[in-house]
Each structure stands twice: as structure tokens, then as C-alpha cells.
Length: 95
Image (tube, rainbow, N blue to C red; front, top):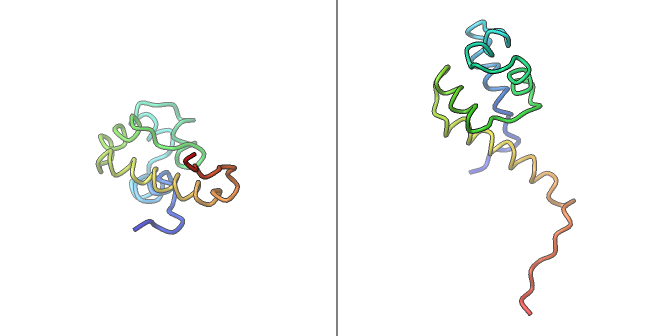
């Protein structure tokens, strides 16, 4: 069952992992082996979690890559559905 307005996975990462572990974005970036700017964009909802990032997060903090990607997909799909009425698409009609 789809979630109503699911949170961005970066919010989960920030609230449920970084805060309890007292991790800064800078320290988390070093742990993940990526730029600080990359982690900042994810935890502030300006960037999504890619398959590679899902693996990095899984290796560093737990969960499976599938779970992290599913959270991202749920978030992205819900956002797209909010804009569905604005899409200019015609229904296929067989000739």
C-alpha cells in the first residue's frame, strides 16, 4: 500500500542515523567516501539516493540497498503523482 506523502530518505538518514550517532555531514561524508556537498544535498532533500549511494549507506550504517532505494522510489513516485494532472499525455487509441 503506497504511503501518503512519504519522507525523503535523506530525512530518515539525518533523523534516525546521523542525529542519534551525533554525526556531522562532514563526518558522514568521510565515512561514506563522498563529498560533503553530496551528503548535504541528500539529507536536505535536494538530491536522491542513487543505487551506488544506497550501497554506501548500507555498508556504513545498515539496512539493505533495496530498502534505501525503495524509500527513494516511494518518495519520487508520490512527488510525480502530485504533478500527474499537469502532464500532457494522450491516451493510446488503436486505429
